[in-house]
Length: 427
Image (cartoon, rainbow, N blue to C red; front, side, top):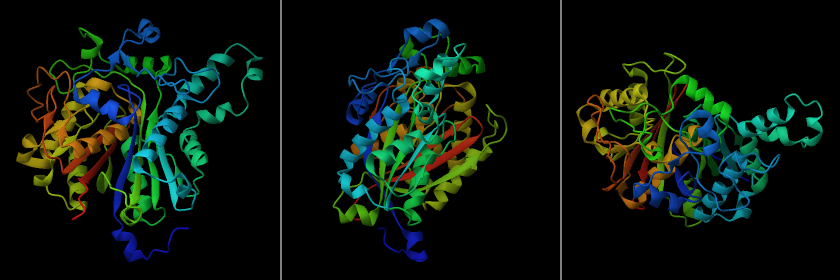
């Protein structure tokens, strides 16, 4: 049972991150994915079945395990939705990394916040395909299968797998879902509701209907010499993103709980902020006032100065409007120091993981802090003169990373910012 916590103690509870689990287009697993990212490897390739229909590159890691599919194109009919498989695999790795005793999770002080931008969209597509024009198809579909298509299926699966009795939540905020899920998990700890939270997000959207919708929006990359060079964040030739699948799961704990079990945190979550830019469903205010204000407010609440920032992990989709919007927001929020702070977008090499993007990229940010290296922005060869920040083009740069800012945003105007500080016992 969680201990009783006074209001004064609740406001001062500190949150640390002790475990990371990643399934990405690069690889199954945290360290394999991290090394491929640092090497400048691109995971973008053509998935033939979809590229024939769409003429666009999409990313999807090759998963060697027989019980896991990273691509909704290959999973067994009417089995777990791919998003559930990805979530459970990443959660297992995060728990091992944190050194958590599974039996300790079975308590009212452990919960989960697993976000999803669209729920089990692959399952919905499968149900639609099976039912369309076939009045007897429902007889072959397991009656519980449709429950796996709901947005909360992944959080429910994790809660059931580990016997969690604390909060079980499913934030939905488009492509900002991953970061907003981690932020909500941190709030549960700060408020004294949980001591441990399994937090993150997943996405398995390699489905023709989803990709066709992005194609009609005009946001998918075109005119590229090879799939590996399709997405070019902050490059003058950029014209869109590529879609990938994956999951990023983090273990959040109260500092007291982590130290009690002699865990070594990756970093402390100093704070986060939420905002909205309601200019348009698919576009943002060119002046970037909402995002700039969010960045300033988040730094203020976390008591972090601009000069303390060592790295900014960008949203960086590789679209004309979004990259310029993010750049202007940072220029407005950080002033003259904006150009000197190393930053990068990770979507050039692994694609846009949509609902999973924020938590996967936050996991990579933690690894950058652990190893003191800034990961690169791939395919940035001809910088846009209007995008004039230090984007760490093409090659990773060794550098101490003690304090980092992570940004995520998405269609509908969802904006999220989070601040991390590398864990040091002296603090």
